[in-house]
Length: 123
Image 1 (tube, one colour):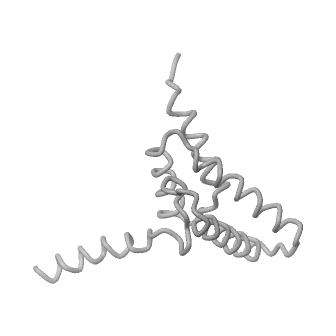
Image 2 (tube, one colour):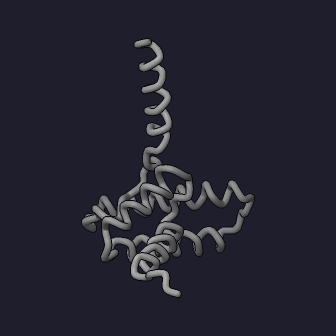
């Protein structure tokens, strides 16, 4: 019986380990703006954008630079997010549970969730 409980616990914990943040991810909710943090954010954006571009088979320097800049702009906007709790939830969902961890995507989903949180269903 103890072996079954141990296996069950491992079965529950292993998927959680897979939900760790991507290597190099800089959390905009805790970003203080140091030069080291800025460089880390740029490094993550470059690596992530190159990975995504390679995955979809696009090999264009102009497109790569445009996507990198768009992600950097989104990151900067996320550092000024007004609802940090909501942003943390978005990050957990899109970076921890599924691999959609670009700052562009996080910004888009944060904006949508923020707007939806202020709405109510009316007849």
